[in-house]
Amino acid sequence: MAKKVTISLIKCDVGSLAGHHIVPKPLFDIAEKNLSKAVKEGIINNFFVFNAGDDLQLLMAHEKGEQDKDIHKLAWDTFKDAANKALQLKLYAAGQDLLKNAFAGNVRGLGPGVAEMEFEERASDPIVVFAADKTSAGSFNYPLFKIFADPMNTAGLIIDPNMVGGFKFEIVDTLEDKAIVLQCPTEMYEMLALIGTVGRYVISRVWRASDDLVCASSSVSKLSLIAGKYVGKDDPVMIARAQHGLPAVGEILAPFMHSYFVQGWMRGSHWGPLMPVGLKASKCTAFDGPPRIVALGIQLANGKISSDDEGKPLVADLFDDPAFSIARHEAVYNANTLRRMGEFEPARLSAEDMEYTTIQQVLQKLEKRFTSLEKS
Ligand code: F6R
Ligand code: MG
Ligand code: MG
Image (cartoon, rainbow, N blue to C red; front, side):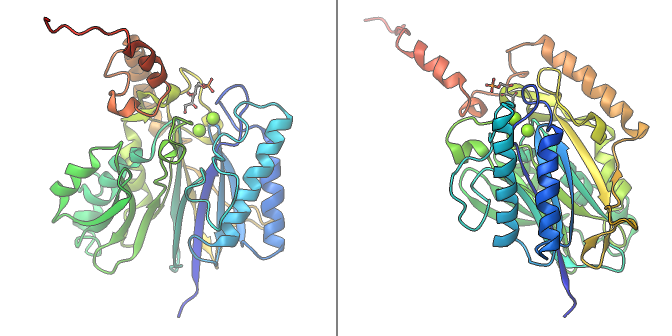
């Protein structure tokens, strides 16, 4: 059997510079140091460290499969070390997403977010990695639908004979902890009935229907459901494979030519426009946003992220491009429009979605002061 490679993207907010804005250099340095050591020890093949706003992102190539204890422990220990540094520097919200104390073999359910995919490396395997800040897991439902199910976005769905059989989607019900697999185009309408409810249903995995080739994987963790209260938004990550019988890199990026609205932004309590940005603008400012997303393009070579002669991974910063400037402009314009509405819906999330935020404490105090309007 051909050797399999695993791509793991594991992320965590371990503390940030000036509020919930950006991961500062000393925390990157710790991640670089720990992961370089792990390469020497043969745990991972190579890696790339980056940030999505205040989230530290560890992108790792290895051969240990998904949900591997060593890989998850490496990420967990790295986040712990970085959080300790953040504490020393009195950075903001040090260790924010490390919700549990003990590591038990897997970071799932402990706070960090994970997207992982194990597969046989193709002759050439282009991959796009997405990471978003100040938003939640369901934010990828819309682009994943466009990429793998909408022929008006992905020309390959009608032009490439390898894709006309459609794609299968695993959808997780995050409230009831269960999942369903639906196939498009045959079950497209049923799927849309679920995934339009972005606060509850999350597309977690996509396969090509004709041969079950795995194409995409995204994180589904809901921090509020782990912690039982608001502790910052989930800030999701996603990995998608591209080209040669799969959507082209350009088709994977096309949904981001326009901004769209996602849950998150200030205090995880507002609808906000998602803004595609290059790494240099991967930092949240206005009203703690607007929510941002970065997209990195990589290739694989023999179990590693393809690298230059010095061993530095070759990474394309895909949204660092004027082709996305209209989306950025729309995001800023729509951000201003929504902010004019202040704390009135639909700028603020619905009462149901506010359930895990601190507004509940404010409302509880008023509860006993309500008097009945019924006549006695
Ligand atoms: C959103 C987020 C921020 C904070 C906000 C208040 O995910 O993390 O918008 O909710 O800055 O933070 P605290 O309560 O820590 O002052
Ligand atoms: Mg934070
Ligand atoms: Mg964040």
